[in-house]
Image (cartoon, rainbow, N blue to C red; front, side):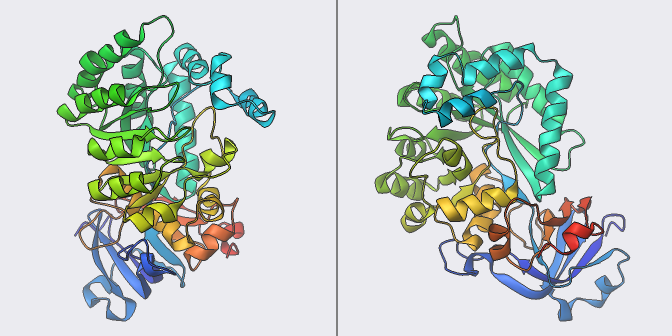
Length: 422
């Protein structure tokens, strides 16, 4: 046992996430009351009732008394665009005045505006700004973050983005999972078919060969890319062992959910226009539904994607922040959990499950997202007794202690404001 990393957390309400997501109440959390958890060598070494803690562990020097607060797996954000530059707050004002996503893009805004800003920014500016965003996610208890490219829109610039994502992850308090978003938009001055060919034949194989990407993604939408184009790009990624994901059914009902299922995608994300047939196809294919209620809110969608549709179909549902430079700059775990319950039909327990075990499924990370002996010791101790409070008391972050791979990366136990949050 590694004494440096070994610790014991006692008297916690432990949310193991070993329940069924569709269950009512706290069922998804499978709570262990007055529990204890032992960390050694970066993994969970023992888990059970505090009264049954083996004597061999009772003498470990580093002991945390949870005092009845909830201990959960480290949170996972499975859909972000954290590496970017520029300020598109003016587009928010345009949307408030009635402009649509596509109208703003046609005026020169949208993705291409960020592409210009990213290309003009220095490597240091991009890395530092992403590290600041990672630090804010860590404050909420996030220990794993997926980050997409997609604002380079050339082979060289997309590879640059992936290299900078890796650089920003160095020394961060959370793991970063890089995803190549090759089909995000058509670059200016390049024929559509030439860009798609470059993504398939040059960019995707190189991102995989160099280990810069773990996953691949495409934007299947009216005004973006067709089903056939997205399928070709994701199949190219799968051939070089990248984990496929798909932006699907966000602005129009384009059959994206069914396409993601057919392509054996790990996840389909957005899904605001997905119907029951699409949800059922995803469930059969074990394709996780990643819902982004904050994105729907900022785009003023009248009907954000609803968790019950996917849960009734038997699909796993995850939640993600979708932090990006244009349509979603509301940051914070508590806001995400609140929006999930108020806008997307989750119960508080289902929402927390979606940010842990569900999100791990979306990224095909089998070593985290739930609390079991032998898994990574990615943990968050909240200044609250349960999920209900987290989703209700929004606008503040409730994480008091965050542990990543067995080491404390955030400790806010001595902050007066946090001692009275619950």
